[in-house]
Image: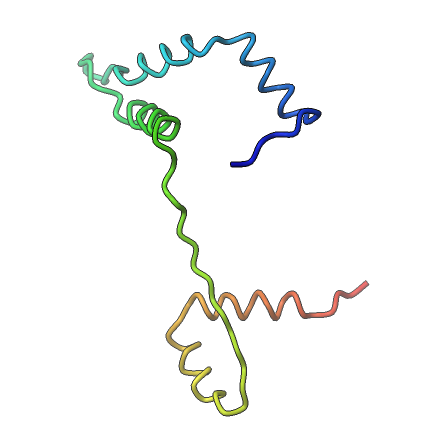
Length: 112
């Protein structure tokens, strides 16, 4: 787990917030958000599902942790023998085409 350096502005802000807003108050606000409601146009009181879901997600993130974010990585290797195969792979993979476009854009000389 990464720790914030003691001289970091983020650390100073975190410490100031912890001193100003106690953890029990934050927990109470999240608990209240789990029971939030909204008024419909007809005057009916309905559960505010968006706020409830955000509060539940935040609580779970702090209690359990967030799930591992999946990333797609594309490895491109170019051999003379595989040029026909590469064209076929490019034809069927939008992610590979996007990666190639990005690589080509980065390789283009910059006009000054």
